[in-house]
Image 1 (cartoon, rainbow, N blue to C red):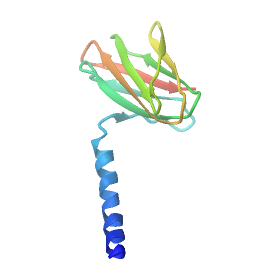
Image 2 (image 1 turned 135 degrees about the vertical axis):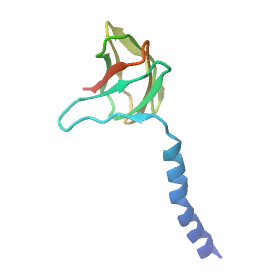
Image 3 (image 1 turned 90 degrees about the vertical axis):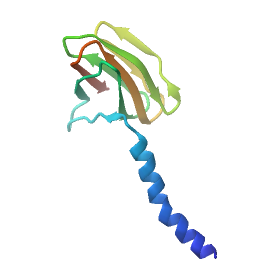
Length: 119
């Protein structure tokens, strides 16, 4: 009986993992090889959530590189919400722990360009 339960648990474990991954609708930001930055260009007028894997004590900079205005609603890490500092066209955050970080960004037009850098 224990063997049947173990086989059933092992068989359903991948399904649970796929469901959790499929539920994440955040757009993954990737960096090109040997680069500290990645970007997104498109419609974020209604807000868009992005996901980025970061290490502890990195400086995450979210920068407006387009012609419109952007607003960073929040950045969260494994420990919760991070506090940022805004300078002109960029907002800067320091990470606390490694892991996925999510950020919600809004634009004021139908086309925005945003750059995400981690130093």
